[in-house]
Length: 226
Image (tube, rainbow, N blue to C red; front, side, top):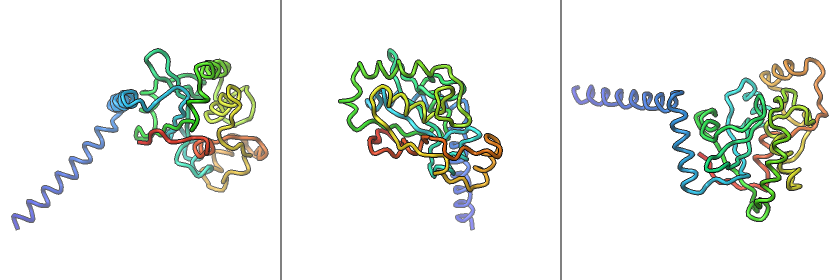
């Protein structure tokens, strides 16, 4: 009897300790600390370079709808650049801006992310090309986020930003361009978000590029997945 009570007590402490540790790990005050450690490891292990692409599951209000419509775990992405000794993610949020890498990682679900890179990055991403990519990116800096995912430069969404920077600086198309109608728009969460954005006039023929399409591009290789 005493042995059973002891075992149950030990099991309870283990579960409680695990839940406490998990809670502490994901506490807002600890998220950035963990992300800073993650960034230091990436730099120390030389697993990150300018021109890399980074993906995460966003905690934004539209994230779930994007995941359901594109059949992908990842709903947000950005482009990594190094400035001096620091790494940043150039991203389309509101507005388009560069975000310190550690803060970008901390902002995603559970601090999880995936870094991808061109398979032939050593040949393509020369210093001159990276400079050109930054120049193209500067044209979008400060622009508003595109809530209706239109294929224009007036407003920009995350995967569109990456696609256009790479295409205009290198001529490479990372990810297949699709039409809005090619996504799964049947889920109720997706229908609700579409109704909010478009009303009854859904632009089904609008050209779009999704984070999933870029993520699945055969031109890329995975560098880091945590």
